[in-house]
Image (cartoon, rainbow, N blue to C red; front, side, top):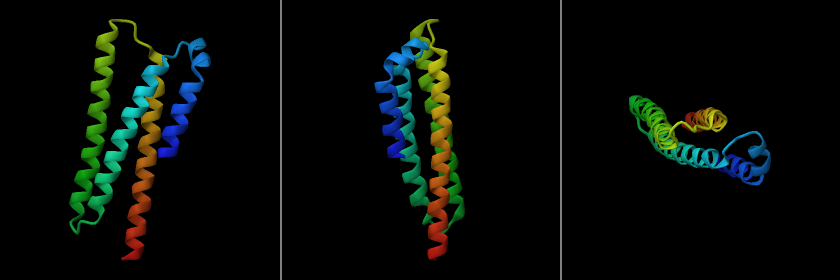
Length: 123
């Protein structure tokens, strides 16, 4: 996940000119990438520690609360961005952030699945 964060950040830092030609605000994408990365790291840490709990409901609650946290944090960030821009919203940047959201969600889920399977096979 760290490698993906660095890769996405480098792409949007070094590709400023190409993004400007396509009317994409790279600042919005970089902030969105950072926000999603930090939330995903937090969720993986919380979920990985909940896997050790003998009560399976703890893991389910932690996993879904992480989903809700990410959803509300992204919604709040989008609301703040839309409110501060006053009609000058960069839709391509928001759609790119949506794609990054999906990528981080998939990586988080597959990482947790691998951790769960490793713990299950070692037990």
